Length: 536
Image (cartoon, rainbow, N blue to C red):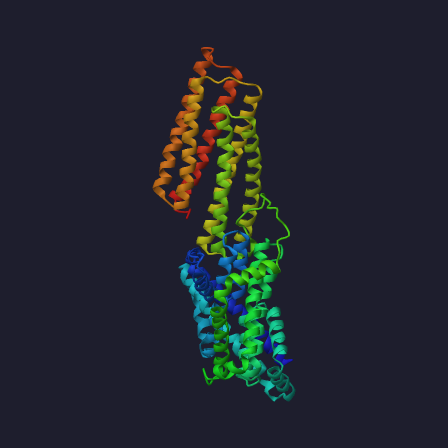
């Protein structure tokens, strides 16, 4: 029972420490992580480097692979780009094993003490994140020490030693064992850390440890496979790439194991370091071997995971993916992209019916505007729900403020869509009743439309570029719209008194002007976030 408690408790500390260290590193990195991911190109080598760097930061290849599946599902990354990132993720995950091999147990408690002190007493948020990293680092090594101590009594068990030794003679059994352990723990770093603890206590030789290590690399793909359930076929293929890559690598290294074992043994006299080196050699060599055949891997997974559905549901948001919520900086970025797409649709709800009115268009433009407005409503609901889930994650103060800005701007854009719907219905009435508008009224309305849409477009541009100067221009345009709307009301009353205007046309005309004036107000609300420095 003492062995079980030590193993379970140590493993819990290890996983908790690794999670806190990764969370602190991610928050410290902030939007640098987003910018790192944005350098992805069709160049697979760049993808490998980015995948390795992000995984080293997050301390989890499973997290990065799941994130990659989310990117593919959100159409932010192609399957070809995903191949390089997944290969790089396997390399990045070797950092934890190398850290463990340094035997930094003596520094675990001081790291926890300093980390907790920074978390409790530091004023600056970034210093608190550093404290979280230190605390996680210390707990990781403390958990490793507890695991190692818990396994120590097993050295006296001849039966356990015999079973573990037999894995060297039955490597396939070792692979299955590694797959099973990693699938249960949902972390190859944890399962490899456990393997290193067993080796440190002399429970398992290198020859038996290698097949388990290879199995650990296959087991870590289970997380990505599970994340692909319910995703697009391309996202499922991205998960399949991870499986195929690691299975092929395991087969190759099992065949080469008689040659590789003495090479790995020669890299260090310490078996814990030998296992860390074997993990690195496996993943780096596997990437070098398979990267030139990335196209063939894509060809294979396309046939393994056929596309049985050809229909694309327009109502489904393009970028939002729950898999990305675990990486808030990325989730914020994709939410922003989705809001800009909603903004383009909201603009259509305004421009289409007014174009139909002023340029003698047909009823189909009005019908399309009304249909697009429904899409805007659906998108707003999806975005708000997604951001609410994101707000429940562990966010930094800066990230929480950015989420609040996104929710506010999405609401303003949705209201623009509502005013677009009002405009479409007014134009529909004018078309059905064939209401006349004077040339003067049309010219005034045309100028108001141009100024309003200019304010709206400039507000979005200012937000996208975080440009306060452009945001201030929006305020000037909004004042112009207010003045134009007041002038139009006065001109309309004069025309009405002179009998130059149809009464019903006048009501529609004033309602159109009022809705446009409200759209300019919402544009100013978006610009205000930029001027205040909240929108980034």
